Image 1 (cartoon, one colour):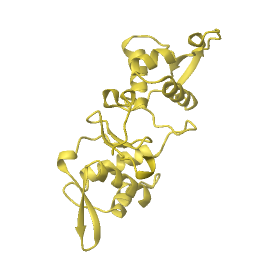
Image 2 (image 1 turned 30 degrees about the vertical axis):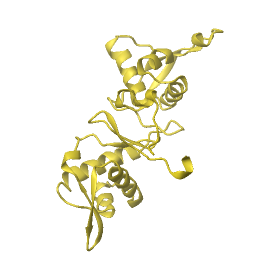
Image 3 (image 1 turned 135 degrees about the horizontal axis):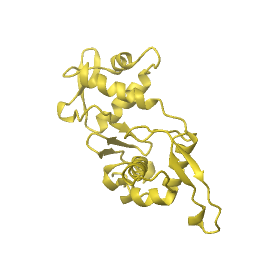
Length: 210
C-alpha cells in the first residue's frame, strides 16, 4: 500500500519547500515588490501555515531572507513579519536541515547523478565506483551515501540491477535520463525529479505503519 500524500503536498508535482521558494521568486521578481509576508507566500504556494512558517524560519536562519518590518498587532495576521530576499539560490529551493544549515548532500547528489549520466552512460557501475568518481578533493562521497542514492533511484525506476561475476551492479536506463538536474531524495520519503517537475516515487508503507 502506498503512503498517501496530501493534495497540498502534491500540488504541481513539487515539494512544499520548492513551491514556497518559487512563490518567493515570483513575488519578488514578477510582481516587482521587495517585501513579502508569510501569508503572501503560503497563498501563492498553496502550502499550510506550519509548512510555510517552518521553511521561512530556516531560510531566515540561513541568511536567504531577512525580516525588515516586524509587526506587533494583536491579530495573528498582523504579526506576520515582512521579509526581503537577500541571497539568491537560483531556481532550486535551498536544501536546509533543521538548524538552517545547507545540506552538502545536495551537491553530492548532483555529482553522482551526472557521473551516472556521463561517465557510466550505457555502462554498469557499483556503489564503490560511483562514490569514487563522484568525489572531489574538497568533498568526499562515501560508499554509504552512494548506496543510499542508488537504492532510491532503483526504487524510483531510474536504475536497473545488473548481476555480474563481480557482484551486483547498476545501469541507468536511458529512458529515465531526465536531464542534468539530479532527482532528489526528500525527507518525506519521496523522489522528486526537477527535470520533469514531478514526484516520481513514494515510499511504500511498511506493515508497522499500517
